[in-house]
Image 1: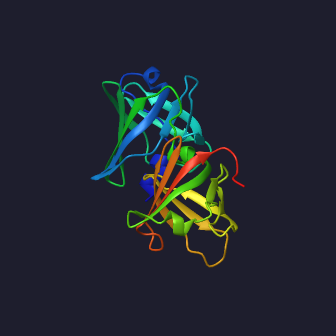
Image 2: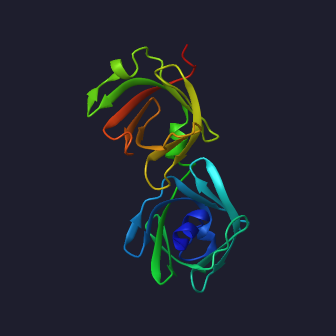
Image 3: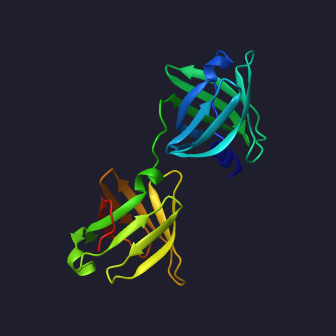
Length: 235
């Protein structure tokens, strides 16, 4: 919906007492639109003293612009310079402890955004999942089928920064495609370049060393793939 698109395209900040308190580096922790609650993943905004701002998700910046602040009404107005014009107007600003809260009406619904101060860019799921991953186990209905699925231990997937993935199948075939991450949930979808293959979506659990993919599409339900991070391509 249009109101939600605006929230996430141009994240900026808001404050209670003066424009000076707006300046800083913030992560958006919660968004409510009417009765709908959302938790953005690694969504941030940096508001600069010179009246400019940048915002993005994880390590990727995707918005910038300028901002105005009205001390009398405690309202903050972002003006994006590289995206869609926002017609909803300024945000009313308040603070609760360290949290900064901005609020306004969008299509007759109250939108509330809660931000917290940060010191470095938050890492998103898309940042964490990038890299070369070697299969260590394959589960079907919670039981290991690795010996049947990948008997020669050759399956890997390379998830590149440019949203391309490279996969070597258990049969030794190399294939490529596109990947994208859900903006609100830790889910990845692979879209093969091979004609006739349906996209597949997976729920993600990932850390620095291990990646778990749990199937959530019709074609991969009850399947789970477990990988370890490696730094060179297997033979």
